[in-house]
Length: 177
Image (cartoon, rainbow, N blue to C red; front, side):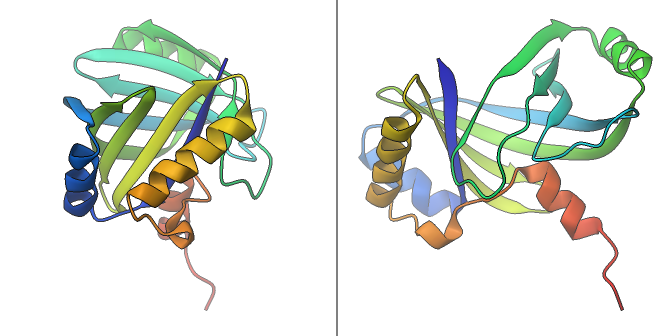
């Protein structure tokens, strides 16, 4: 089973009301601070991620494999393990990982049938939705997620083509004069 995910830029309050009207159940609010790292021996490409996530007093290290360019659906394998903040930082340092960017977000988590839905307020970026399904069939999952987005009146043009960390990097990258 893979995690299939599609995200979009939204108006948080409007979409939250629509989710609730569809029967979504609020699970919790959670602040997540992700430190995205660059491994010294390779360049992070095609949305490859090495991440130290701090949430609710827990720390998790995650590696997510690269994904193809120009996709609106993210489906990839990932490896994660829980650790302490100190051990996690030591582990990444031992790998030669250097902090690249910090993604600071508050996520409101909803459940609707078998959909996991995150409404995110991302510092310096704005408001987003991420809808996830666990599935062995990427295309069926994609169609189901897009159908739910249509019910929420989310415009296809507002779909995210890249993860938050890349959007933040692009935002802070110096512009050519």
